[in-house]
Length: 312
Image (tube, rainbow, N blue to C red; front, side, top):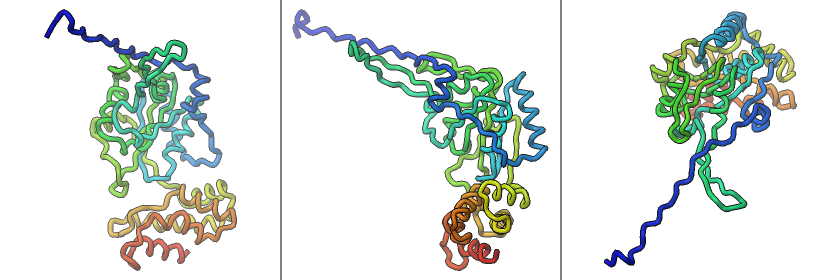
């Protein structure tokens, strides 16, 4: 090979990784990163939980706070965090943890940007809403369905949730620090009936210094909520709630084959159909009944739930 005529290797400059320009508070709201928390007048919270959450609001002014919320689906865990954000007038951010596939998804992604004038290209790091949220003082951050994330993603959360309150990102070349007064709420549906969930890692659970167990409302209070939210007759609301109460008690019995309870969310959905003229039994057929398996014929979950509905 003639070295005198050989072509020299071409050096290609690597595009610079740059952080997206910081957004102000108004832009964060406009982009929908923060949700304006709504104070639901029909939301029922007992005095014990109010005292606890008032204490959390005071504690966060002097030290980090993480709260784990446990309970069955549709019992008001998410609504409770929105209530807290509304009462404390805090920026409110919600992240569905089940949408995350790998650790980097928490923080953003690389994007190719082209200058329309010169055609020059560069790689820009697009911050995720989560990054903006953790850097906002006094934010309330809900990590919803926290038991639906892969353990590798949970590992990335560890330094964010512990005393360090920060994490270094290689791609961004920056340490993401949690702002003062930020409260993390993590919700979890705990139990074998919730498919697709991971058991909370002991190290992650240890970082949730406060734990709040949520459950369905007492019968009379739930009836009042259904009436207030849907406008249906109290007698019909009572029968709906009695169906749910019977199914819940059966589902909580280890000897019962029923795999799940009826949530308040499902009752509200049925109530809204009834308010629009749908027959109550049909309303339950469109909301509650389909989630129960028909396998097993007359001995199936669906057959048992239908029997309870007919009996009420």
